[in-house]
Length: 475
Ligand SMILES: *[C@@H]1O[C@H](CO)[C@@H](O)[C@H](O)[C@H]1NC(C)=O
Ligand SMILES: *[C@@H]1O[C@H](CO)[C@@H](O)[C@H](O)[C@H]1NC(C)=O
Ligand SMILES: *[C@@H]1O[C@H](CO)[C@@H](O)[C@H](O)[C@H]1NC(C)=O
Ligand SMILES: *[C@@H]1O[C@H](CO)[C@@H](O)[C@H](O)[C@H]1NC(C)=O
Ligand SMILES: *[C@@H]1O[C@H](CO)[C@@H](O)[C@H](O)[C@H]1NC(C)=O
Ligand SMILES: *[C@@H]1O[C@H](CO)[C@@H](O)[C@H](O)[C@H]1NC(C)=O
Ligand SMILES: *[C@@H]1O[C@H](CO)[C@@H](O)[C@H](O)[C@H]1NC(C)=O
Ligand SMILES: *[C@@H]1O[C@H](CO)[C@@H](O)[C@H](O)[C@H]1NC(C)=O
Ligand SMILES: *[C@@H]1O[C@H](CO)[C@@H](O)[C@H](O)[C@H]1NC(C)=O
Image (cartoon, rainbow, N blue to C red; front, side, top):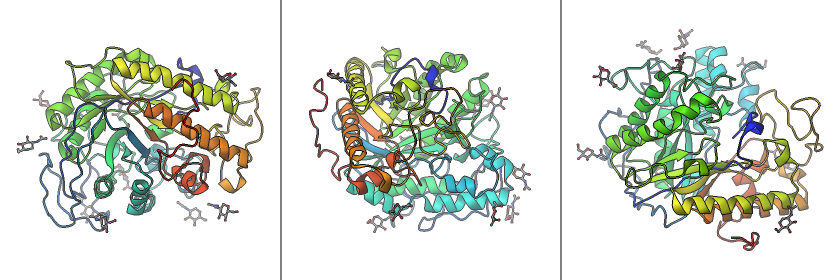
C-alpha cells in the first residue's frame, strides 16, 4: 500500500514487478515453532497449536525433524515459464489500520496509528495479548484452502523485521526491537507449513526494516523521516536479518523478497538501494544456495530505472517486483473507468518490454480499488482525497458512499467495473511473469478483498476464466 506521499512520484502508475528465473527446488521442512524471540522475554507466549516445538538453529532447515504431520513435498515452481498467480496476506504480521481497524479501535487510544505506536503506547501484556489473538485468528488454514481452491499458486507473506528472532550470535548490530512486540515467528512458520500443505508457493516479504524504509504505517512505523538508510547501521542489520531468514526458512520458501517498497524518491534510500539489492542477493545465495528466487523492487522509480541490473551472469534467479495502484494522486483518481483500464493496458506494454530484456517481472501488489475511500487507507485518522477529507482546498470527486465497505452497497455498474479492472490487471500480470493481488481480506473494504470478490462474483473462481479477454487490444 502506498500512502500519502505518492503524488510526488515520478511514475504515474507505480507497478511492482518480480521476475523469477531458473528452476527452483523447494525443500521440505518440518514445523519449527519457537518460543524465544529477540532479547525480550516472550516465553509466556503460546505457540500455535498443532506444531511441534523445537528450536530453530542457525543451521539450514532442509531436514524434517519430526516426520509426523509434515506436509507433502511441493514440486518446484517453474519461474519464468509458469505464471505466478497469488495473493498477499496483508495486515497479519504487519498491522495496517485500514485492514484491521477493529484492532486499533480496541486500544482506546487514537495516538496508536501503526504497530510501532501499538507497542509503544500499550503496556506489554495488553499489546502481546491483542497481537497473539490476532496472529491466531486473522488467518487460519481455511484461508489457505480457499486460496488454493481459487486457483492461486502463490502467497506473499509480509513480515516485519521485529518478528524475525535474530540473536546476538547472528549480528553485531542491536537485536532490540523495542518498542515493537515480538512473538509472531511461530505463526509465520505455521503459515509456511499451511502454504506447503495446500500447494501454495511462498514469497517471504520483508515488509518492515529497522528504522523504516518508507515511513508508511505498513512498514511498521508511520514517520516523515524514515531512517533505514540514514547511515549504514540499519542496512547492515537488515542484511543480517536476511541471512537469518535464508538460513532458517530458506528451505520452506520459494522466493525471498529483500525489502518491500523502499522509498527511493528519498535521496539516501535511492543512494543505498542498488548496493542493498546486490549485497542481499549475495547473502541469500551464500546462506541458502541457488534454489531460492531473490526478489527486488523498483522502489517507486518504475522498472525502466533498473535496466541491466542484476542480470546474468552477475546474478541468477532474480525477480523484479513492481506495485500498481492508481489511487494515490489526484490525476489518477480523476480517471474514468475506461481511463483506468486504458492506463493499465499502457502500463502492461511497458512492463512487458522491460521483462523481455531484463529481469523476470511481476506485479507484486495491485487491487481493484479505484478510490482511496477505504477508512484509514491513508493512515489512521486521515481522510480520503476522493471526498475531500484528506486535505482542505483540493479537488473533490464525490462521496465515498458506495465505493467502499460492505459490497451490499456496491452498484451493479461498479461491480461490472470491478470485474473488468480485475481482468485487465490480471492480463498485465499474465503478460509478464505474474501477479499477486493485495489483499486476501480486509475487515471492512470489500473492494480490496480477493475473498469478497470471489463471493461477490467480480473475481472468478478460476483466475483464467476471463470475460473480457480482449480488454486491451494491445495485449
Ligand atoms: C520470562 O517470563 C516467564 C513467565 O513470565 C518467567 O517465568 C521467566 O522467569 C522469565 N524469564 C526471564 C529470563 O526473564
Ligand atoms: C493439511 O491439509 C489437510 C487437508 O486440508 C488437513 O487435513 C491437515 O490437517 C493439514 N495438515 C497440516 C500438517 O497442516
Ligand atoms: C477499551 O475500552 C473498553 C470499554 O471501556 C474496555 O473494555 C477495553 O478493555 C479497553 N481496551 C484497552 C486496551 O484498554
Ligand atoms: C562481528 O564482528 C566481528 C569482528 O569484526 C566479525 O569477525 C564477525 O564476523 C561479525 N559477526 C557478524 C554476525 O557480523
Ligand atoms: C516492555 O517491554 C520493553 C521492551 O522490551 C521493556 O523495555 C520494558 O521494560 C517492558 N515493560 C514492562 C512493564 O515490562
Ligand atoms: C536506524 O538508524 C538510525 C541512524 O543511524 C539510528 O538512529 C536508529 O536507531 C536506527 N534504527 C534502528 C531500529 O536500529
Ligand atoms: C544444508 O546443510 C547440509 C548439511 O550441512 C548441506 O549439505 C547443504 O548444502 C545445506 N543446504 C543449504 C541450502 O544451505
Ligand atoms: C481509451 O483508449 C481507447 C483506445 O485507444 C480510446 O479510444 C479511448 O478514447 C480511451 N479512453 C479514455 C477514457 O482514455
Ligand atoms: C454486509 O451487508 C449484508 C447485507 O446488509 C449483511 O448481511 C452483512 O452482515 C454485512 N457484512 C458485514 C461484514 O457487515
